[in-house]
Amino acid sequence: MSKTREKFATQVDSEILSAIRAIAEQEGRQLQALVEEALVDLVEKRKQARLRPGVEAAYFASHDKYGELYKKLAE
Image 1 (cartoon, one colour):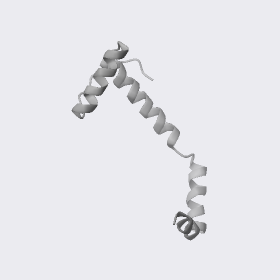
Image 2: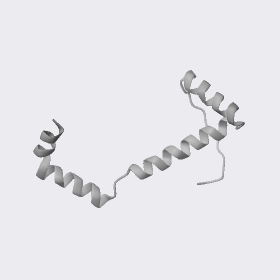
Image 3: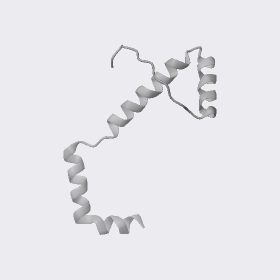
């Protein structure tokens, strides 16, 4: 990740912001550090959640073949 810092503005639920401020105070960290940590965690989680193209194609192909079975199993 880049080490260049960039300012941005956003809005967040006041209860969430209060909770994050409390965590920052308890841990002796800056709010900015916790926000950055949360964003990095989100990016990493989303990267891991993506299926490889071949896996995704096989998954959708299996729905063409076994879609009705999947529905019955879900019931």
